[in-house]
Image (cartoon, rainbow, N blue to C red; front, side, top):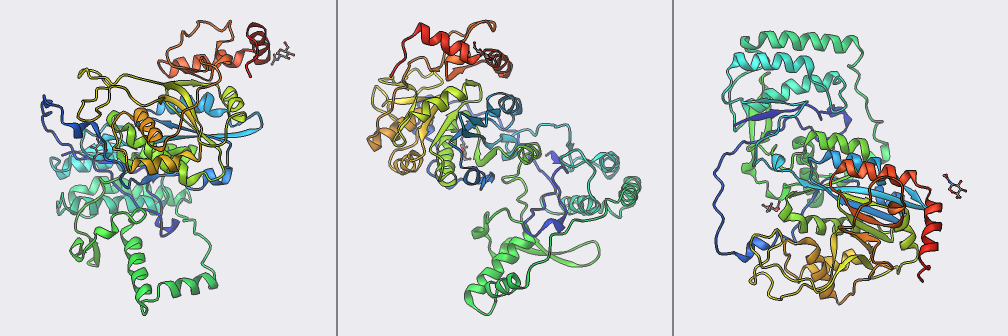
Length: 508
Ligand SMILES: *[C@@H]1O[C@H](CO)[C@@H](O)[C@H](O)[C@H]1NC(C)=O
Ligand SMILES: *[C@@H]1O[C@H](CO)[C@@H](O)[C@H](O)[C@H]1NC(C)=O
């Protein structure tokens, strides 16, 4: 087993009771041989677990309501694909006011396999991988000597004093809790003297630098305090329930209400700490569950454009991602008329899109590359294979290709209602089409067939007006997007539009 120690998102407890104090990321390294593929297709393999109550572990709960944009762009992307996200942030993601309309974007992620704890942990720049079960005290001492000297928070800065001290205490708890249960003290055992000398040196340095000041929140007002006392009054049945809930949240730092309902008296145990004081703790270690990749967390705090849900992010789970997107849009953006789902490898001309939407229907509207009468693929080697047992028709209902489609925001709630009646196949865009059919809604063709382009011929060089004439085009990689964007920005749009008008009579 490998344990990944990563200290990059430890915050002072003084930051508030709702701050989750997360000390360690544990990735369990499981080796199991790949099962050989089943020759007879089991239809259940072509459906995904949806509807299901997935939760957001990274969210921007109020941003969409506060900004009330005209258009929200949602970009499903794999957690590790930071490059694609950064490229979008530097290209079409920058277009936040277009034709006087506010446009905002969000990246939508699931959990990576690493976070799920079922795959090899990736070694990252700011993390140390320690095999605690195979290390001796001397080896751990050497690792910790370097770790204490070099550890930095998510911003690459020194930790504040209390976080830094908490880091070592947390590490000590971690190796003594199950499943490791090592019965070592990294604070007191003589084998750890050299690393603790480094630790003490850093503590002195932090004090000197004045990093021992915790920033406290202002105190609770008298009125709020009265209200809290009332709500948490253990003399009333409701108050008692609230009190117990509150204490559990406070002492065990559970994210949201996660898993609270599964806790039983047997979930808890009491232990004694290194100073002989008793404390209550959980019987089992839950740190692997829903644990965030510290780099994604840092990215989210920097850009405030990441939504991460707790399903396993994989190609075959894209339908879950899409449905979770509808859930989020349906509940977070009450004042927004339109949204677009767009893949991360696409060029997007936001100007042309907003221009289209300003003239579009406000309701029951969905457009993009509309596929009609698409044949169901029965070739088992295809990426989009679906057996008869999972879908018996020979043609799919009309659907918009998942690369990029636009819709009015009255649709998410309706599609979610339909999803309760239509079993969720793994091909996400087809599934949305099936829900639309169930609802009896039509798809709208774009005003010009060449606006949303999947496999269009992309011209070389910058000497033409291609990028000013389309809405989307699929690209190969982030470099191509940067290139296309430079080319697009270098064109004089009004010149190009004038040329296009000369070449093509304006359509109504
Ligand atoms: C899809 O996500 C669910 C929920 O996280 C998970 O149990 C399942 O293994 C995932 N399936 C695939 C094919 O990744
Ligand atoms: C674009 O072209 C028009 C007319 O051809 C000109 O008036 C305008 O200044 C140009 N804009 C830029 C940014 O070069």
